[in-house]
Image (cartoon, rainbow, N blue to C red):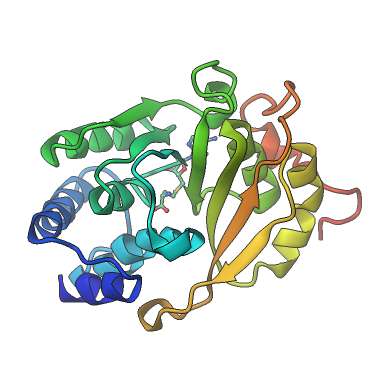
Length: 245
Ligand code: SAH
């Protein structure tokens, strides 16, 4: 796990041997389940260390001193095989984490893995963000809402901001040319109670391939009609007429 260790050190994180052992278990289980369930196309050991584990840990760049306080509650929307939520839970064992995922087989993997890793305070939740966000115990209840590789930003704003408590933060991981996407998301973010988004480029050498965090503060309540029914956020994203190319 030298690539992960070195990369984490650049983020100011010193992973203990027990945590490295947990990442080993994660890697083994990911590969094993990936033969039956389509979890990831990245399977090479070095690539998993960098593009899944370390990439998940870059979320810490949104925090002062790159530390996630143990008091915080986080939800990962469309977690898939657990990214970015689970690597963060391994690195910061005292956070409260919910992993939300719509696909049953991936949910089964997440249940299996969290048991295997002996993690406390992790809830694996099966369902769609559009439905779950309306349930009182999840609506505007989280300090931090995470999401990686789930949808176009205007749609993703609608799948994430409704979960975020006022004064909390939505942290979205994006790759590639995102300038247009961010400007097209302005209307959705404002409508859903978000502030001006901050875009932070990931500058660590191992991941210097145009990765960004889009960080949005939750400044006012999300109107109760959002999110709309499943599929609508992507099918009819909240954008200004004519802005979609
Ligand atoms: N975040 C993971 C997975 C990305 S793939 C990673 O970066 O590796 C996108 C995942 O989001 C899929 O597993 C899909 O089932 C899930 N997803 C897509 N739309 C969703 C929704 N509306 N609610 C919950 N999960 C969703």
